[in-house]
Image (cartoon, rainbow, N blue to C red):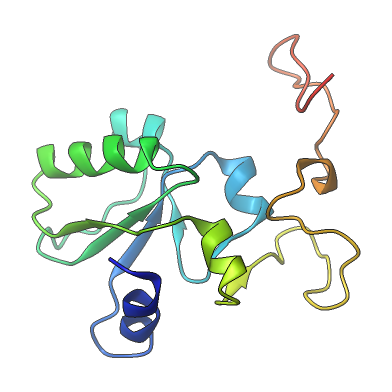
Length: 140
């Protein structure tokens, strides 16, 4: 599905469910408005929210398409018949000046000094140690 078609459907009574298959940190950095975050690992474990209506149109997105393909395959296995890929990514939406939600960390939407959709250093957790393991979040 093209971004323009999804935007048009979002403003109508045929609004599809938008599933963002990226991880929680990526999702919080920026995401398509009204999208819900269901990472692939949660789909594998049946722990993410899925609508009870398996006939509803579900549009799946991620950053590069790999997780979208896996998520769509899993949704098909679970009986969802109307799954579609969103062409592009949240970054493509940003480039087309379509509505993104970047408010999860309390930054103002206008006048931001950094582009949080594409700049991982702008993320508040960048460089912080992950307390569940010995790895660092972000580049060392």
